[in-house]
Length: 176
Image: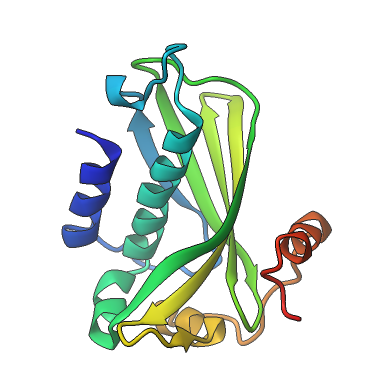
């Protein structure tokens, strides 16, 4: 199954919520490298990592029981900016894990880190700045999304790691 079909499946048939999961708790998605993930050099294509990260973010939302809550409000997430640092290649048939976690938020975006591991090996790390929009195109304040997704969500964001805050300023998603 291609990653686009997998994302569609996760969107319309999300996995079950994890009881007691909070918005700051990590979410884990296990995957295996398929032939459609590979480039001509027979390792995972750099763009495919972003599709895999999309699937893992949907699983993060599903773990919180957030799919129905977002749909009821007619809100949906979009990526405002992303960056990936690649360390080791993933090859055909290998199993790997993506751990997704929210690092924090500001008045514009929610910042996530998604780490790809094959066993103990770090393969890639992605930082994602995500926005939420309503079906009429209006931006939704990140603290409203966090409050909707987490019954015990903190009122204020944790401090962002300095390198993520610097990245957010560099790609112009940080508050102006």
